[in-house]
Length: 88
Image 1 (cartoon, rainbow, N blue to C red):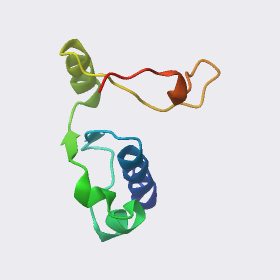
Image 2: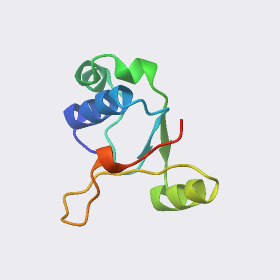
Image 3: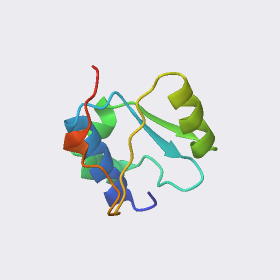
Image 4: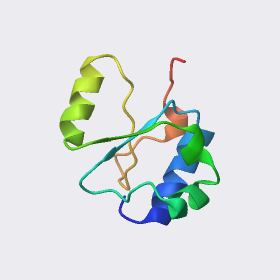
């Protein structure tokens, strides 16, 4: 997410949805900045944000280690987030 406003909105949504953290690609993401913080409405300060250089490998490894990995897509094949059952 290259746009600071969009990254802030993503962090705000992740916080609202109860995510325990967010992982972004360090090569293709906006940096954490005052603009991101403002757009996140404070979620950036409350939610751990991690960056990795190899996002796909990180997600594959995390899934193998038992993480629930979710993403967003504009596709007819996408599953609604409300249809996903999570173990907390």
